[in-house]
Image (cartoon, rainbow, N blue to C red; front, side, top):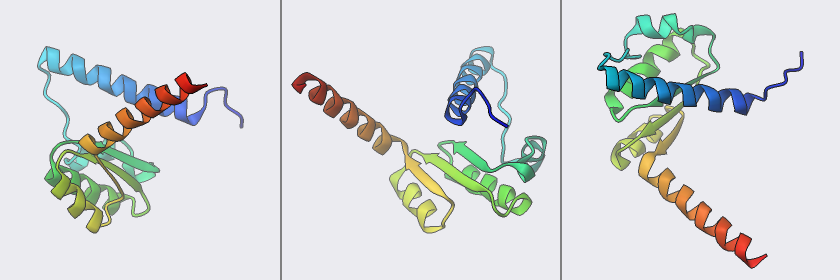
Length: 123
């Protein structure tokens, strides 16, 4: 069944909406739902999900979420963003899925941008 909206567009829109809702929740001082609570992951239909994306500075919570998700869905793919390089390395060794270190990814993005701008000017 063909769709007019690409998967990447849907993912980007979802992440953007999550970011906006996060900002609104912070401004309204609404307590966050913690996905390390099994009920939250169950309500999110994690058993049918293809992927779990975790963006938390707390490696302990990330591990807990992954453990619960894999208990409910052993084949789930996980993507984790973490702030600490040591924790990122530990998570990689634990084979939790794809691990991104925030500062590292920011540096790569900035470098890519600079190189693209230089390439554009040389054309």
